[in-house]
Length: 198
Image (cartoon, rainbow, N blue to C red; front, top):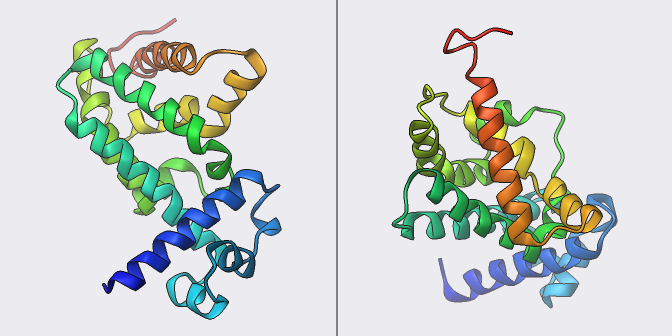
């Protein structure tokens, strides 16, 4: 890809992030708005992205890549690794969260993940080792992408921003509480796998 093409794409994604951060939803941002914010012509913007949704997906993918890079660099393991990665995720949501909350789909999370939604698969790649090792450390059976499903329920950007802004938690406290809640939830999810009943 030519350097000016890369630059234009990057500028469009960054411009979209700024606009999404202050918007009331996808319908309030147009490709023309994104092009104007990026100081690029609408025609050039449409050469890169067919829709506002595509730009948002690229934005979310970039954040997922940052989480994956962080996760891959960590030397910790097990629950400690998961806690480190969750703290970094909450920091990223603190930086970019309002731009990330506009993704909505009538499909459930697992269906989108299993169908290969790029912005979800990069996040799943970032969390594969932390989730697997934490579950192993707890002595629980492997549950594959169902761990990502449970993680997403608790660490969705909307929920993170809610506990920070409504409850008043710091990013670190939010990450630690959500990680602890996830660990409890995964134990409950696996109860039937172990033959437990109430």
